[in-house]
Amino acid sequence: MVTRSRHVYRDRWISVRADDCVTASGVEVKPFYVLEYPDWVHVVAVDRYDHILLVRQYRHGLGEVSLELPGGMMDRMDVDPVAAGMRELLEETGYGGQEARLVSSLSPNPATHDNRLHLVLATAVDAVQPASPEITENLEIERVPVGATLRLVADGAIINASHVGLLLLGLSSAGHLTF
Image (cartoon, rainbow, N blue to C red):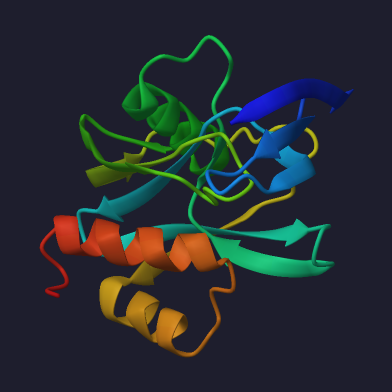
């Protein structure tokens, strides 16, 4: 049970909430910090030649370049994860298409995060325009055959743990992988 809640930090990227809680067994936990983020959306995009679209970009938190799925934070006015995912895919890679669906909506970390992470599968995507990433993004687009993508996962070349899981879910949903 939450007995008190207050925001200790807020900006456009994150809000940190401090909750004072009492567990079911009567133990007080205070403060318990909750990270409030907008929902995130990522896309497993497969082109007509069974290549996966990935983006390589510098990630400041780790201080390394990371190979990842296209996507990012949903805008506050977004209500449809599929539309948001396809917008992110188009912005970051220049690829688009009409065949897209929501595969799953998960929690990135239910212990401390209050947001959802939506996975969109887009198939038969094509290059339709030049990529137009945000000014803060410096992205390299990589088209990788499905089999080679799975080797990248197995070899640890894709280091974002949530993207590894999302990629496997997306490839399974697309019929490229059986569990």
